[in-house]
Image (tube, rainbow, N blue to C red; front, side, top):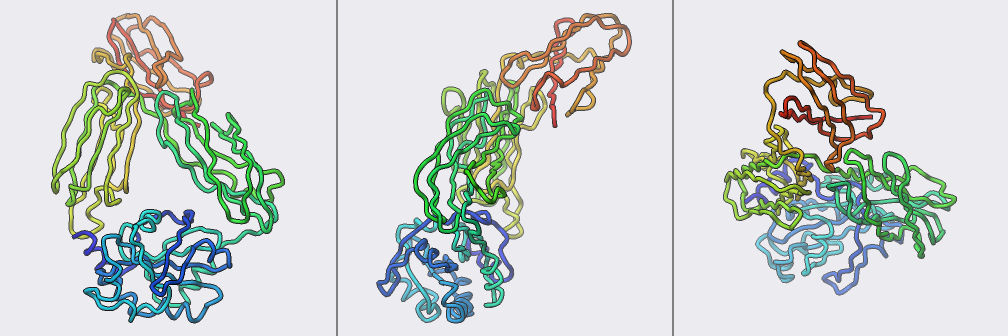
Length: 473
């Protein structure tokens, strides 16, 4: 089994496969330990203590081996005013009684610090648990970083001393974005951002969230409430229309008197759609755990197609003739490691590829996409064309900043129309010219076009040559 193989690997070296990204926000939880004492995470952090969270399973051999080292017990005894070590049996399918009588033995004989069971599985879900043991450092400011199976007290203290704390009397921080990471047709659905009061001894009562496109504020969302130090709030954002596909979308917290602006801006990497022809195909080769892979294609009317229930190294080859509209392809891995089987040993990786056959473009391809990979693309009626092979056509440079040169060779004089489409299917540039015999050049400048993805259609004698075109900063 994959997880058992990883356990063996974890006893040899630090596991670099990420779960929660470093400096993620630590969700609060309350559990009762085996002695009947209630433990609350955020209350403990409010005491200025760092929590070392050990997520284990009673059946996990390397978890037992790590507990036997006694390093967490030594850490707790040496620094009781700075650290609280917490061991959570995080497998909800395991009965609490297994703590005392598991295949490994009695866990109370190797863990002499806070030990508790989570029958709900909520902690495992909130902390994106993918393998056992997982050991997190949770700083007093609620920021979580995976530290792995550190072998010494000094090494643990180096990590703990790296925790940051609030330094200013007025400081607001933007932590994360929750919402769509792809969009079609210029329409981005509403999402939300998580903010945090990072002030020392001051309550955050009001601020604004600025939504910016290419550095320009397009929307201001006002918030009011009451947040004590390190408390957080989720702020809902409105949907946006007419967003350019190549736009740089960022969010910024605007707090009057903010003394530290280094933590005010968030760039979640939201991507617009790619224009596509109607001829789109999907290729999947699963890895050695094909049952973990599933996918769906969602179009204007809902789910167009989906798939799951695969075996090891199964292949999928599907070609669609799609109607015009916005589509989002999603591929999922239930374990959270994409189809990168090689990270678990001598296994071949899988691959997932979505291709626009009409334009010859790979819309998306991925091996390590963790739990989900997605791509948005727009099928436009204008892109369902017959390719012109009678002329030699080139574009250089592409992508371009200030201008690109369209070069076309004609054996006789012809009439040519040049049209540039944005990914909404709108014509944003048009040029007519009569071709001379030989090489003809047309300089196309970017001064009236926004940064982003376009398609240029060269029409000669009623035949089309369609090419992707990108304008960059």
